[in-house]
Image 1 (cartoon, rainbow, N blue to C red):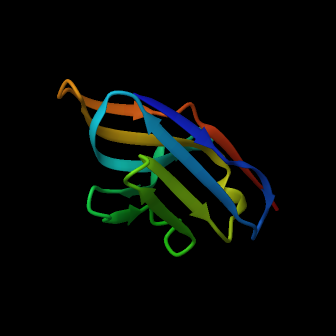
Image 2: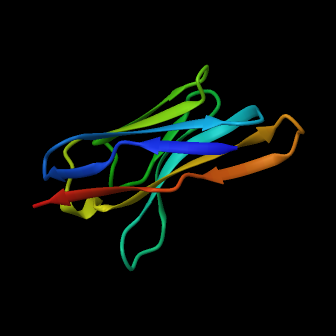
Length: 119
């Protein structure tokens, strides 16, 4: 299973960015799609995740500012990030969990995309 991320970049505080991730390969089903982030010197943390029935969860620091959405037909997930803060600066990783056509479970990570918010 391959993940291709797009979006990210440099933005001023208060601005917006949109990240997208497309999953492809021998996918039978996807349980959850989400985004994690890792800032320098910090552990990777959950930003947002969305399940198979549209149930979404968010990390506490992004609630009310970020919105995750999913296209079930295209196996894509997007993260709309508004009111960005300098502390949102990190490498953002797409994560997808599901089953392959061989019925094997998988958990795949994207290559990461840099988000930098300037003050």
